[in-house]
Image: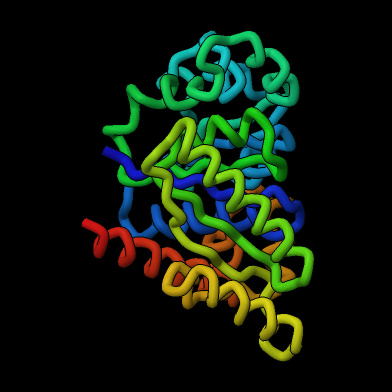
Length: 256
């Protein structure tokens, strides 16, 4: 049975989708069976794996509203990762789900038939705490939180933790924090050091030892529809996300 990990932070621009795409690819490159679900209406994970959002006829939107089964929405990529892509209709899914009974569980019900086929399922969440994110949090076992080292990141983090507490209480009692990872990291800035210290005080050993540096190639790779370990196999970005993937797999081996 797959472990399901949501990659979430309601603050935009923190490297959430970059982490979802590249971590999932590097975990797959280490021999694990991986599925990624693009729950963000922007569809950046979908395009990051080389799929045009407008070409998707059956994706996560159809899965959520019950018009397609998971098997019908999964696309196999040349990067050893399977994906349930987003399409242009996903932006309206939040409104459509409002009237659906147990609307927070649509994704969980949809994914249930395929969870046995994978080791890990990653869910890329929207940069907001809406019904799509709620579905992801009600489906997952744990949440991986990318954080950019800046002052406002701490504000966003407190809101997210409050949301996780509510979800645990109402919908998903076993929801855990997978970890916190620092993105766009520069150890030379005083503010970076201060933010890191505060986050470590709160999360302790949940903070990943691996950090993701600022790297031009990480920004370029999505425009070529490739995860970083394919776009620049020997670069800093690949090294960082491979290290993170090793740490991620090690942490989950330890849990078992």
